Image 1: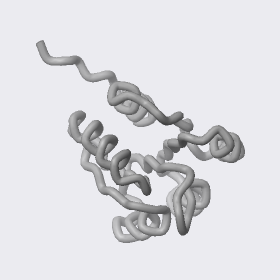
Image 2: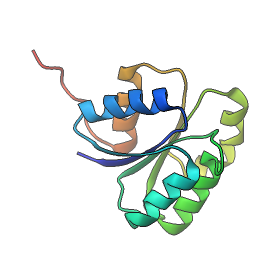
Image 3: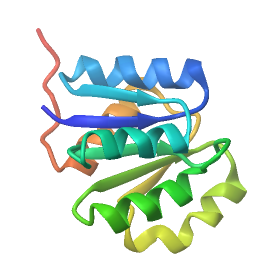
Amino acid sequence: MAKILLTEDDDAVRAFVGRALTMDGHEIIEAGDGEEGFDCLQEHDGDFDLLLSDIKMPFMDGIELAYTAKAAWPELKILMMTGYAEQRERADPLSRIVIDVVSKPFTLAQIRQRVRDALGTEPLRDAC
């Protein structure tokens, strides 16, 4: 499965999404804000299959993180999340470098599917 950097400042959302993606067998590295996320990218030399980041965060927001990450690692896939309509509009110029922007709130099934879509993987079959 994929190695995913999850950057989200809300502990509850980060835990929810992390658990959801772990269910699919992904390796999840978590960061609590954009600066910490960029530090993780540098520490792993961009060796992630996907950067899944919130847009609105303290210190370095997700938009700045996306631009900075894409400049350093052009092949990195980026999927953004936001619960704010104005933040989604701010992300419009990112359409050239991010796969999509997922609106919060979302269900466990929705975020799992959006990540599968971003990674270009087949949907998982539920066990009998």
